Image (cartoon, rainbow, N blue to C red):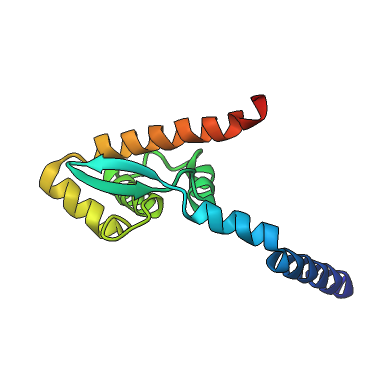
Length: 134
């Protein structure tokens, strides 16, 4: 069994090296890095991921059906939301949970901002999915 795992690991490493060495793949990844949605945060432009990062998608899936909802504190939900928002934002100071907590504490505008960005990303992902229809 250990030999099979070792073989699978080596095959995966070979595939990864092939992808890393492929110019087209690397160009696509580089182009994707430059893509962003721009949101106005009280007069300041803010760059946000144009699609939900994998880490955020996995977080949502993991927590979607929490069985301990009765024990969940709003404070925990808030901190999770600050962390997610930081992962969605591409530039400093917006890409830290501390900024979002500070912003929320001083303006109370966090949840409205969070919802607008979430909806903006969802709409953009719909456009990304629609490219095949054209």
